[in-house]
Image (tube, rainbow, N blue to C red; front, side, top):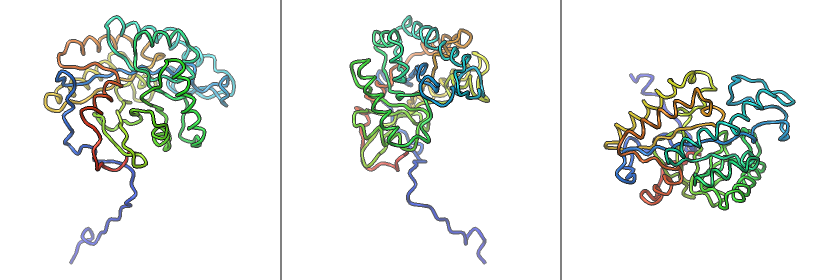
Length: 320
């Protein structure tokens, strides 16, 4: 007599555009420059001046990623929210920027085009420092329910503005609060080397979009100061530092045989606050005390992957 389990028949749709396997426990050796065990990549998000705001034509004020956790949206200016965001561009950016300059370290900026266009001094500082600028969209809003044509228009506008500001087109894309259409639209533009709207791996990888090869350089929401402004996040600089250090230690240990990458996400208005900034200083000290670490820009990782791990057919299913 067959058991119920023996009789059970499993049916799966063949149209399942997710890659649940990845490298299936056998990732390629990254071959980082200099034989590095770990590639460490710092991202500074510049969003202040591109957020939800009635002055930008939005129906209400910003609610996300500030020191007012769970903030309501008001149909007029939210003056406290305004000033929290303004801290990022007035003070926070400069504190973080000066620390990286003092140490001579590279940095990637996820730049919202509207925000950067409002702040010429920061644009000039980024250019002088030769930071890698990734397009973070025209607006810092959620695109989940934005129609495809509007998202396409915003994407094209972001590219045009960033090219005008920095005299070159961005090579990377990161929306953050993306939509099911975002990656298709990125590939449609034709000029992007990679995108980072993905959090599901410790290494870059290739996927296909409309039968075209496309590189993904994963980002992070865990080793990210945004958790100072979310439930079950970080309350102190010590907590953030400990989490970063533990992440680094695990990846550095694994890197003896299987090198990986570590991304660290930063926001001007969050980590730029003095009480949190100390965690960044301590972590930079810790990383720089280790040998065989490649501190680099996101563009550097993408170019390295294209050169040393080029696209090959066939690939696993698309990740969307």
